[in-house]
Structure formats: structure tokens, C-alpha cells
Image (cartoon, rainbow, N blue to C red; front, side, top):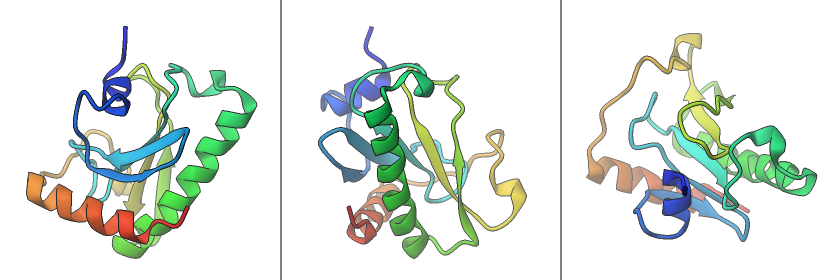
Length: 131
């Protein structure tokens, strides 16, 4: 069965896209832990990140690094945090989150953003990402 992320890749579900390559896609989390919370995924549906083939594993991480650099320009922070949880959606993904204190990486906390705020933020991050 296709995951929600596979449906996003297929264009069946819209997203707030910030970057895309032939094999990877990055978009804003619609239930963000912090403002600027981005998900980076391989377009190929693989549940467990460590089951990705070597080439795609490296490509996803390089892609995520490029997205993180653009994200940091748009959402000023001390560092962009990285998390790979892999429990909530059965599709490999990397969480990128602007961090200014250790408590910002708390998946029990979420910030509310309107559709307009998400769309504007995605547009600004997309403009800052250099692939």
C-alpha cells in the first residue's frame, strides 16, 4: 500500500514543496514541531532508511544538507537539527528543524501555521535552496 509520502510524490496529495531532484523531494511538515520543519524523502518508497541502497542513501543525505543550508538562511537558528525516527510514516524520511535550544527538537510539541504561512515559508525556503 502506498504511503502518504508516495501519494505526495505522485501528486495525489498536495504539499508545500521546498526542493526536488530526480530521486528526492523536500516539503514542509504540515504539523510542524518548529517553524520551518522540513521533511526530506526519497521518491522511491522504502520504509526503513537503512534499507535504502547505498547510492540513494548518500543522495538523500546530500540533498538534505542542501535543503538544510537553504532552511538556515530563511529561518535563522543556531543549527538545523536532524532526526530520523521512521515510526510515524512507513516511508524513509529525514526531519530537518531549525533549532535555537535543545527543547526545539521535541516531537510532543507542535506550532500552528496557517496555509498561507506555510505557502509563503515554502516559497522562501525553495528560493534559498541551491541544489
